[in-house]
Length: 110
Length: 113
Image (tube, each protein chain N blue to C red):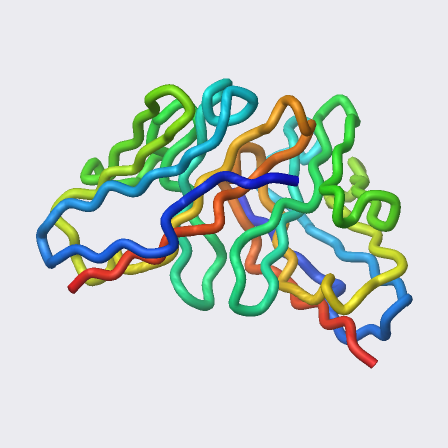
């Protein structure tokens, strides 16, 4: 099953802004959007944004999600060391009748 | 408080079977949809299966015909029956609630002789 496409790594400086992307097609991201998850080493993933771009309760406003066509984006402002983690996107693929994940982006805060 | 606790992982020989459990609290498993997601060592997340509130189930191609997702409403528990296990099934298996909003801590399955 084809997955979503994410850049393997992104590096930004402390207090800068990072925008992570997730590209799919009209059957997945373009259809119902993508959820965003954060995973720190050795821990389970944590939901950062629902497929409708809303943040769950307790998630910082410095994170914002959006979608343009078949590409979803997650923007993180004011980067801090604790933002260094792996970030995954996920969507339901209506043509595959399957959930798909991106390969993940490792965010490094310099 | 929503909580998911997986169990049942371990070391199993190729071709063997295991049943994973995911005990839920703070919500009713049958009222929502639930996933199994796995992560091989050093790799990314891979969706395995989903069961919807109406009972519909879907599987990743890599496990179709070998794995079965189910739930016990009386125990508020989700299961994953894994048969004909292969080395490539080695991973931490997580259960997660609808839209991935809550995750368990995961249980490690190692398939090796």
